[in-house]
Length: 248
Image 1 (tube, rainbow, N blue to C red):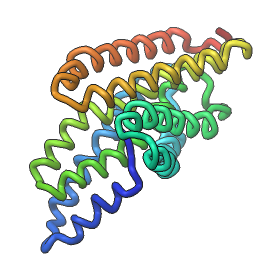
Image 2 (image 1 turned 135 degrees about the vertical axis):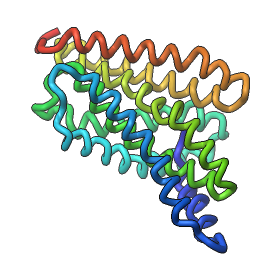
Image 3 (image 1 turned 90 degrees about the horizontal axis):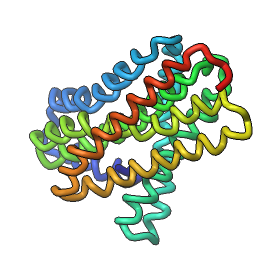
């Protein structure tokens, strides 16, 4: 999963150059592209039974997740000028995208007084990740629409089940670490956070690599995605058992 600056032009220009634009199709596809991000945000948000976060901060992180796609896309395109595509997909995109989402949470809410439970790292990481994933999803769905409506619908369905929640699963790896680190001794914090970022980048790279062919896709669906869900649910459970603890 990666965003390219020219993706906007590749998507929008063919749509507007069509002889007739069906606004019902456009609005319907917009709903299909945006709804998964909202659905998965609600799914993870309701996992926080400790002290649910203010919706204003959730929306802020979601929007910042959308906005960070611009510098992320610029950086990926810069590397794309001199690196082979395979390296861009499995290494540069995972590193740049995960650090971009991490930067949003670390600078935007980590020091906020509302970030007062280990589970909060998971919730805010999810919000930033799903904001990022939602814009990416809109671009992919409408790029598919330039070819055919059925392809756009199929793309939206597959991405709603894999790519959109995938961004949340990746980022929860470092989000959970961020939540644990905040309430751990200062000497351990950076090591905990870096280990979470490493896992996020690793799984993101594996996801991008496996999705490139049919055999890899099967491994992704049958092995990697279930493994990520298990790890994420374990992290959510651990964070909830630490509810109310200020020192770990």
